[in-house]
Length: 103
Image: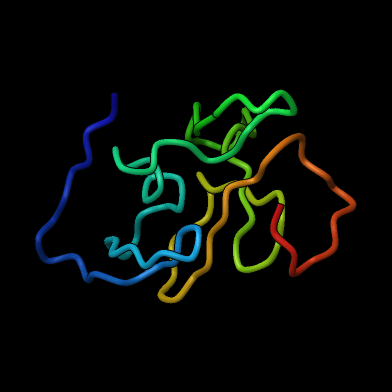
């Protein structure tokens, strides 16, 4: 289990995870923001099994999410931005999926 190290001076911003507003600290990655205990996972496999970020350094691709309408984004390498819209990806990644649609 990971423990978030927080600086109370960090600016708070709002992202939208599955269309719900979530207050997060500026500077954290999308993966860190959505792996809080209340969210816990980033995508599902083709069999429907929940998956979450594993390596947190861009190697394993377990953290693929749709971010601001673009599918297959590595959440562990993407910093949060105010107003960002983030969705879990369900099933296997579709690298031919149209932009602007979330899986």
